[in-house]
Amino acid sequence: MRIFDFANTHQFLPYPELADELRAVLRDKRAGIAVAPRRLALPVGDGGVLLVMPAADRDIAITKLVTVHPHNAEQGLPSIHGEVVVMNAHTGERLMILDGQAVTARRTAALSLLAAQTLASEEAKRGPLLIIGAGVQGKAHLEALGRWLPANDAFIFSRTFADAEALAHHGRMLGINTQAIGTISDMLPACGIIVTATTSRQPVLEDRARDDALVIAVGAYSPEMAELPAGLVRRARIFTDTLEGARAEAGDLIQANVDWSRVTPLEEIVAGTAPTISADATPSSPTIFKSVGHALWDLAAARLAAHKISPP
Image (cartoon, rainbow, N blue to C red; front, side):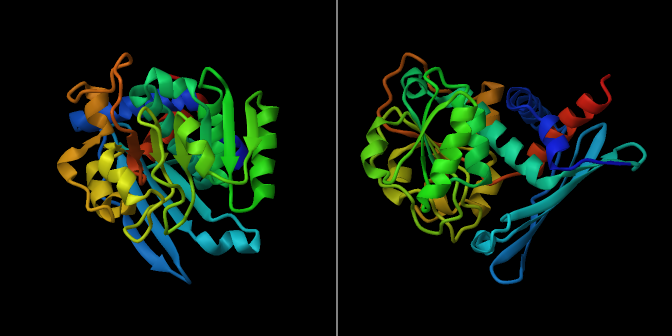
């Protein structure tokens, strides 16, 4: 069995290829080929949570173990630790262990990239990208979306301006025209795609997103957490990574008392069974893509890594 650290795992998972693999896994999910139970969440320590996330398709099985401790940042520690164990589905043989932090960052941002490819209007793609949160997910989303958007313009906001500036510098090194900002409110009406990537329990932006904006919310992972204001949620078109996960864990939607009949899982868009956002349409309200995570997204990462390590 081979063990890969953060750097090695990172290089196995380029965002465009991982977005394609996620699309394939969504199709396999719909066909009953890729399966995963609801993840187990166990509170640990002081405000932490242990997540256990198994999944399998016809060839490989995985289990991801992740701990999330939001207060670690105050001690200069990563908020997320974890690993993904990859097994041969036919024999149970352990094939590899991937770094869980790298997998989580890359597959979450790649799923957001897939959502943007599918849901963003042409006007939203032309507008600047705004990322709220300068941690691991903020960095991954800047990498995944910043170079994909035609204008390559991005703004970064963080509670600590120095963190926003550090991520902005990283973006500029990648060729993305990235600027740290000290306030959000005035920028919201200008931005086409807005990413919230924080662990906040309270909304981190006002209900001022423009009507053609795509808001991608990835930070809140429990009913007690909400990055988005209820007013924005109630007036937006809502899509999610999985409906079952959102019902259980998407505090942004739960706290807004959302009508779940208005929430469309991404797999229905990929399968073509639900209407997408027409490129030439004039949106009358923003679009929200809310993801809370799912073991199938880790399965997609494991499949891509396996192909990179042992090409067919």
